[in-house]
Each structure stands twice: as structure tokens, then as C-alpha cells.
Length: 151
Image 1 (cartoon, helix red, strand yellow):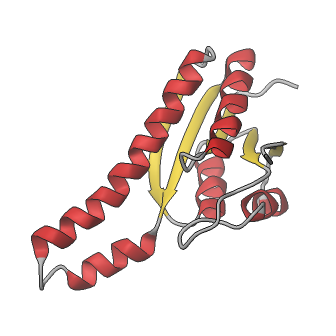
Image 2 (cartoon, rainbow, N blue to C red):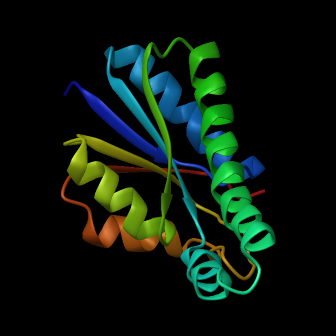
């Protein structure tokens, strides 16, 4: 089996970095395109839109910073994949929750495989231990590689 498109998500955590490295190596080994996505919190964007009329400069800055941070994490993932020999890489930040963003990217780019870590971070806009891997594995229309990332 040869893969032509690999999708992986990252949130900048050490566990996500492990998944990105596996995906980068897989893409390099198969000569595949690698799609790296970072989901960012849509609640902060919605809040920013509602408050924009009251305090436009500060709120706009807040909304863009969230997306900007997500884009930086995706670009960092790209740099890791390049080090591992991946050559065709798309890196993007997408508003939404992590499982939906990964599944949508897989559909949009016609992925053959999605790479996810076995463990996530906890927090307001993050996922709880394995929920992303679980959701993706239950709903993906392609292969799913779950990388052991538990510490």
C-alpha cells in the first residue's frame, strides 16, 4: 500500500510533535503530500465578532493572535517534516474543533491516511486524552495511524 496524501494535526504539544514526525517520515517514505493542520478555538473568534463594535483594535488583535498562533504551530510542524525529508507540504490553521478539522482536511485533500497521537492535552479549547484519536478513528473515510504518544 502506498500513500499519496497524509494528514496530521498539531497543537504544538510534545505529543503532537511526535505525531507530526511520524507523519513527516511516512510522507517522505511514500513520496506523499503532507497536510499539517492546526485547529483554533472558534469561540474566541465568535466572541471577538460580537465585541468588535465596542473595542475594535483590541478585539481584532485578540482574534488574529489566536489564528496567528495556530499558523505558527502549523509552520513549526512543517519545519519538523522538512527535516525528515517530506517535500510536498501544506500547513494551515483552520477554525474548529480538532477532530472535525482533521476529518475535513482529509476529505478536502483526498487523504489516504490521517496520523493522530494517542494522547492529547487538557484545557478549555483542547481535547481530553485520546478523544481526537477516538473521534477520527470512528469517522474517517481513510486509514488512520494512531501513534503512541503517551508519556
